[in-house]
Image (cartoon, rainbow, N blue to C red; front, side):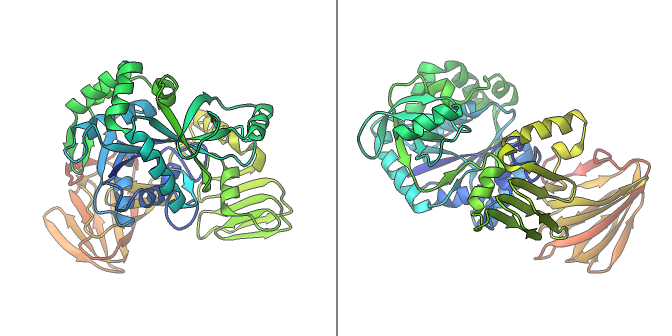
Length: 472
């Protein structure tokens, strides 16, 4: 059995405005009908794979479990990283956890993969994993390289030793090249893109950490020992994990180790690192135009046009080499060949303290989601969706009153000592200061409109008395 370890963090800057700090790209439906995270779960499932281990942060934990359930997975082991420390500490913590797991142990194979990549041919990828498993069983630290089809400057490269099939010896890692060097490497035929996917025995990678990066392993071991179960999650010890260096697995271990192998893969891969990559993966038409959503393209060429809102029509007229991404709260228009610079957009917006820089318009919660429809002086209108069985905390507000109107489904509403069921077109008033709770006792999603009024409408105006999701 191979134990998948899925890395599910990210800052959400490269595909802004669809991807943001509060909702990074792995959770978005960029290609097809499922998210990249869900596609990763499916790819790493089946008779050869054990229950996945997912490493994510506290902000994403409920989104990760919700999409896990949507994809039909009954369970997974979810480790919460209390601080962002790059891939080396994440992989070290996962290896330590698997070493202690009776279902795994030091001889188990662990396959580490990001959750935000596109792989077109799942069967071909599983075949590559099988080839890598043979090398890993022999004590090799295996990475996977993508056969390049263009002189790409946005990826690191892997240089192969000459000859051979299957897992081959890895000569060296190469940093992201300039255009001339990328062209030379493509022409040589002896270089692969570094996919950031790894396969090794648990004991072998722990031995590599001991030899090359003990400063990573020690705080991760302490963080695992200090960790605690929290609902269906396991939280690593905060202070200990924060003491680990912020470093990638490549720099910490792989570039120093001698027992390295690489499996070439040519089954279609992209890390969707920029909107240009999304345009390429969507499959442009004969004019080079890729569209999604409510879009009309007139006399356009080599462009990506996406409307991410069902009520916003995006029209492109006479465009060439343009990426236009429309959302309800933000629109990006950029040259397609400048899409790698979107991080600069996010930085500029953060400097202006613009909430759109990091906050997604739809805020996901363990019980469902909400979004603001209208905001003005002393009032706010929200749309709220609660999943079947979901419930908000028992709470009160100091500065605002609320009026709820159910538009679909059934709501169980507690106000003070009174509990009532509301169905479509029924409403209830929540006075300022009243202790209240909203629940969905039905079998379908419940939607309601909330109208808030008061002198302060911030999300921090909340006093929680009970919460089934253990939030403070």
